[in-house]
Length: 113
Image (cartoon, rainbow, N blue to C red; front, side, top):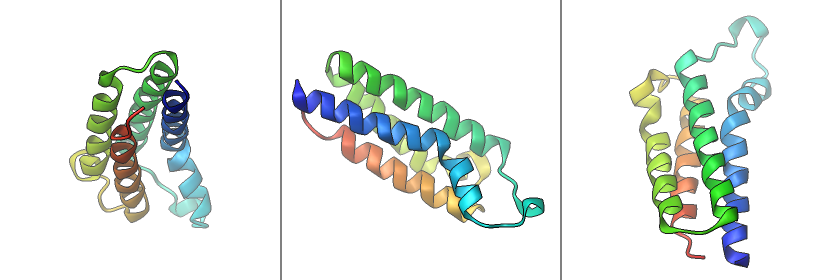
């Protein structure tokens, strides 16, 4: 039970970062306000994926089954390819964020509780 709760917590933190990362990264970029633009596709992508990951992490905290890991892995793979599918691949900061978080989500999905 303890490992399952830890996995759920780690997934929740990854999900929280996924939800807030577009805004955090834009504000950390120190770009002038006139140059700050995040594509709607990128914002929606991070919001939807973050919400899915949050639901999975809550489910992980309630009861651990195999489906949470599989969905988390699928969501992680989607994050890795999403910059090019959704069309924000030219934004290097958001692209690297999506790839890094996707890899982390896949790695966490492989942890056994």
